[in-house]
Amino acid sequence: MKPNFFIVGGPKCGTTNISHYLNLHPQVFISELNEPYYFCKFDVPENFERDSMIRDMDTYLKLFKKAKNHKAIGEATSAYLSCPHAASEIKKAFPESKIIISLRNPIERAHSAYFSYLFMHPQETSFTDMINLHHDEIMSGKFNIRNILLGGFYTEQIKRFQNHFDAKKIRIVIFEEYIKNIESTITSILRFLDVDGSIEFSEQEKGSYRVPKGALSGFLLSSKLFRKTTTKLIPTVTRQKIGDGFFLKQTTKPPMSTKERMILREIYEQEVKNLKLFLERDLPWDDFN
Image (cartoon, rainbow, N blue to C red; front, side, top):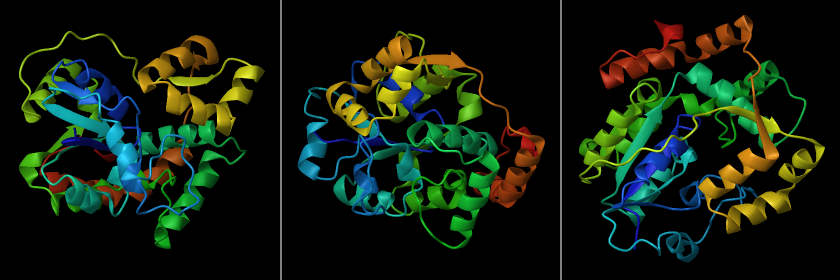
């Protein structure tokens, strides 16, 4: 079997949560491996490392071998939205695919992306310093898939997918509206995927901020070998449950300073204006209203 829909991002915009709910439907199959990154390979260096990344098509298609009579078959990789070649390469490989895009206030999205970056790459870089560093990268035209700001420049990223896929095959979700109306949004996405019928919702935790429970947990989670092995052997949902039960604890996310918010508002202000015009709608992002 081959995929016929993709949840392409944006990063930290609820794509894993959306995947969870869609996968509850008996006619929907989503790869057990979350974020296989296959279509990112055209934009990252040969030495780029990601625990879940797959680089060859044969291995990639094995992700879907358990799909039998499913009507909608897909995967979620949030980095596809910002990767310059992902849209065209998905079109070449699976031309009839449908695309799901989720958009979030880019200021909040960048803040969440920063902590995800630190979780995977522990270091002492402050949020302000990383904003400045990654903004300089963008201004210089350098593409860095781990850039915490890049994922918030939605307009051109959506246009890339519209250049290759008919507008009827693209569904755009606004994250802040989604989390207030999960069931109705998921139902509408199922209709978009031509799948009928309701599903029995089981609550999936949304975007809590978690840190290692102790020194041993921190050591294991920082181990590339440990992460790579568990990623390959244990399905994403199961891995998350194990992590929440044994390795991680929920805590309060460190707040964003007023200065940091103002810097990000200045970075994204024109982008959000462009996005509103492009989508022909207002957006529920108080920072820009």
